[in-house]
Length: 138
Image (cartoon, rainbow, N blue to C red; front, side):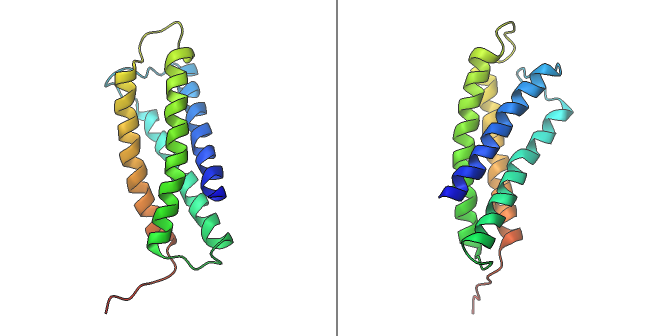
């Protein structure tokens, strides 16, 4: 559990930093306008998941990990990171843009749902990539 909290916190903090970097560089997080630079944010959970699951595999499981173990660890990391990212998003909406009204909770919730889908897909990809124990289906 310690591993998932650490790497989940990394994902959440990087997401908060990313929101304020986007704001400070002049990109608008309004309703349906997606800027191409926003797609770089997909790397935040991917990097956090990869290094978190790899650390779990190499540290706690001595390099021998099945797909289900990796997937459960990925979901633990995403749960911690997602809760922190949503909390950071609420802080950003309420206090981060005092001079602008371009970000509403409704438009931001659509982005959070998209991030959830991306996170689940990345969890499956990282789990498949880092699985070392094969299960025979004879």
